[in-house]
Image (spheres, rainbow, N blue to C red):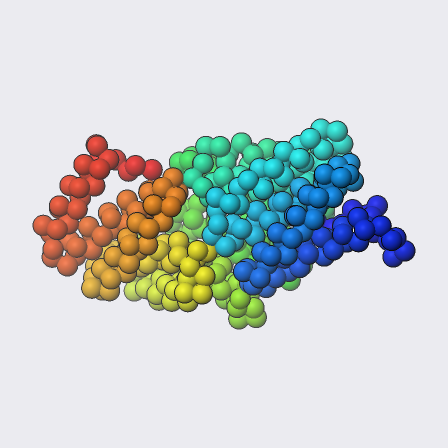
Length: 383
């Protein structure tokens, strides 16, 4: 969030003006550090900026409330990127509340900010397992940004694409998979056009959108079609990660993880193993450096590797080690955030039973499945 223009002056001697400039610079620094992959370093300037703007807004709400909301939004994102999901939600909720009041008084000035804040709020709610609540702000963000993009495509199409991507994810997580596909397809189409015109600016967004598209296509059974966007996402993100590993290695690992699954789903099982192994290796290094942010991702890739092995009917010893590690991680995470991780822990136990079957340990597999059935009461997935 840039400083309030009314307070930027090379000649002002007002402490408030200089504090506002400082807070704006701190916000910009936090964003830059985050984009460079330096997530731990990005948090302190974001926290300091929010603190400064809060003091300024208490003294002069009309001048600084919008800056406070922008810095709270940024702070929520920084906390989320460090895996501090529950702490990330309150500043984002506060930001959305401020922007809603501002947009009611001055729609032309603040509707874009409200849409961005609602988009952020939907993501943060989903991260703490409040999936039903996450849908409404995501839908509202799309509606606002669609109107803005119709009036000014060059300015707002990228924002619309981002919100469409998030809406697709929200719908999918609620089991509304057929409804989840059209917004994701639309987002990928927008980002492709933008990336053709400005690759440096939009290739990362295109890759994210293609990654999402591959997942959504697979979810509705269009597995052959899901492979091409997944492969393209890996190719783009590999180039980006070669140029800037700190910023893009996490994204590359996510796409490699999904590519391994997509290849296994279409019967190309031998080819599926390499991207799955690479995803685990990258995420293990990331999790060693920053466990809070990356342990969930490591568990996801360990589980995906185990699933690929079960699908291949091979490498069961390695699969057992990987899935057991995933179970151990998910057990710890479920203690912290059951609404988010209990379902994933259940899935990990199911794959563990499949691995035990593959190793010929059928009695242990049967006992594990019996315990899972007892835990859910009727054998259904608790999520």
